[in-house]
Image: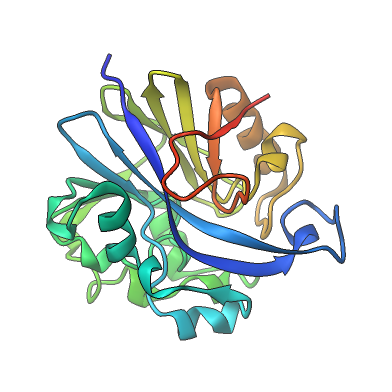
Length: 247
């Protein structure tokens, strides 16, 4: 089986109350957390998991604490960490279509873009708590050529050593990405795990639309992965290949 190298790519940060990510634990404690994408390669393929923010001011309407430095726009950050230009990337995988995870999809015009079909459908008809985080300009036909989309229906092996598993709860069609690396299986979790506490201490993340499914999804990650890159974990360094152990 192919072995992958995975690196964390920071594309912004958010100041928020810790309890927003940990089911009320740590209420009143202010944190600045990163917004993570991930770059991965097996030496042949170039893969990007999630694509960050489309428009900072637009996203601030939903998340007032969001910030982005000049070097953290997705194209610049991918170039800085991975050395890749947008046209180099073979595959983009969206864990879900919230605007801090799909915002720069339109920059990657040569890529196949993998998403769960259920997530695509939900994004155009969002529920009340998730509506501010779905920005159709990230994923509609003006942003992405429809023929780039690769719609998935459940767990899928995309390439040897690269799989997606369904992890609904944060959104209806959420998926997480598993990479087979030299150190073990790394899960790029998206926001079913905002921070490692979610998976390791069985705590709900921020924004939940399916409560029982959250706990089943966290269990799936614990069963599959040795390490995790959560969507907003502050303990990980930009550009790092070292992630948080899954307990």
